[in-house]
Image (cartoon, rainbow, N blue to C red; front, side, top):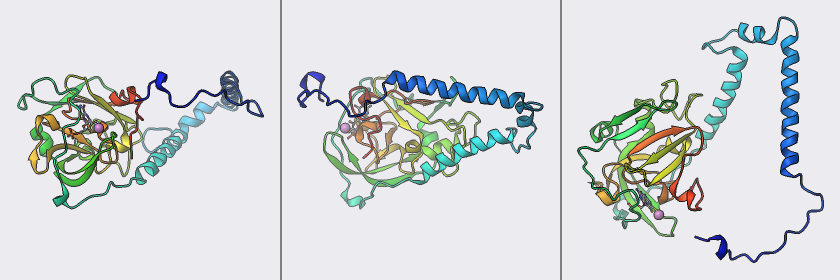
Length: 280
Ligand SMILES: Nc1nc2c(c(=O)[nH]1)N[C@H]1C(S)=C(S)[C@@H](COP(=O)(O)O)O[C@H]1N2
Ligand SMILES: [Mo]
């Protein structure tokens, strides 16, 4: 990790740009001026005739949401749908190429593990309530197996055969990623789907954040087996995250809590200077 006092780039003064760039203060002032103008515009529309609000709420609606507002929501939905459709898959390998990776990273694994007492706690989007799940409940969902590469940001990679349940299947069965309680269908994402999800070890010492598209990716697993065997404690038993389009740092071992959020959840390695997304 490069610290500020080890910066390898020699300090050179920035050349003066030919046309001076707008200062941050100028950009902010311009943004304020624009939003004031559109606010005044809305006010005038409201005064016209019987008032914009009456017009707005009198439009036909098909879901309890006034029509013009619905259009805005639909536009957001279309955007996120396009985002989900761009999904690419991490390459898969012959199972015979799978090996056991070295144990890399033990942050959050210090406490003794009692698999029988372990629960995965999930805090629903927009609530402070949590629901607890046993390993058996996770294993009751469809089992997905895949042989993909675990890539560590330190420069090594290894092919591993993983098994678990898709996080998207879990969130379809237990609809905790929306405020409305709609299932989180990645092909038809509800408008109120949480944009981010955070995960923490039971002791909260290791934690990762994911955007929701990565969380609902078909290869993102709540994983409980490595190379045909239940996970060992040092590889993340009872359940770890596997998400092969991201570097190993995101593959949190020993999931304790999952929580949905409106902004990027805290991330152990992002705090230490790595890219928050850490995709490859
Ligand atoms: N709880 C926890 N999970 C973690 C880590 C960690 O330190 N603590 N390290 C990460 C890193 S950097 C990598 S490369 C992978 C390695 O997984 P493995 O130990 O099963 O090979 O776990 C990830 N998950
Ligand atoms: Mo890593």
